Length: 352
Image (cartoon, rainbow, N blue to C red; front, top):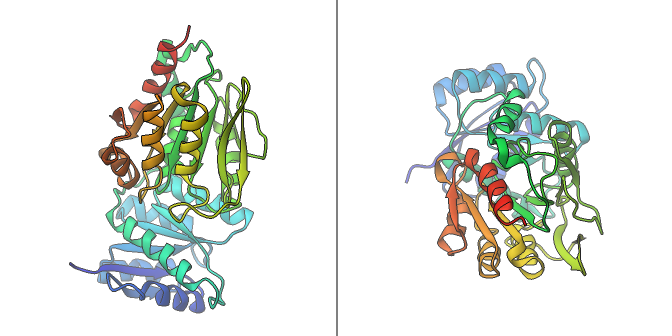
């Protein structure tokens, strides 16, 4: 097989060296070049024809977002953003994902003596997933949510039950979740979400969604109740577990060991939904690499939940939905645009 050709764009010579070293640990990847700024990167893209670009968020001469927007308009290609774990870095990275970046990698510590194997494997996995991803340059149109809400029509008139909606996603999931949530009416049943993201990013992600959705969206905290019209997002670095106490549902968060190399893990959340909500739950698995969520969704279906997987055509990466389907845990396979209507129709049909 041909190697995945990677171009690294970063203004830091040391970071270019670090990323090159991490990626060179895998024989399936070849770093074909590096560039200190977008202008040099533009020329190297033409001459080297890379399969994947790693792009620093903050650079001189032209910032990463401006370059990404121009690149996606002229030559859409898989881009992996390299971002710092700061509030500003989180916001910029989320904007980059809206503009068409496939995924992001949190900037590693310069001293990599500790955790180098884990850092290398995370980066390698993300580059490999990016190379297989479906890429479309895009800039979010905020009117689309309102248009789709109108199109949902009578399905938006929900008679509230104790139904819970559980959503799992990874690569490409931030945009898929946004598209799902922004069309939902304010009386939507409670939602719990696990998106593979590190700490700090989940809070910025939740806050961003909260500004554009009719429902409330927040990063989950210990003991948060599940209430109508609110979505809880598992905090980065913590598993989120659904718990039932009498008639009341709430979530707990913990730092138990990673599952499927992830914390938060979709499987952990889905398994708790199977255990405590059973047939009162709707499970949705969206775009993402790997198999996290497959066994949990199978458990949900066995417990009587209604389960949906995003179809391959609308996924950035069809890994997680594909594995859930293979595990026999999926009732319906639908495009991303069809999923909100199907969920609301299911809620309405099970209402008294």
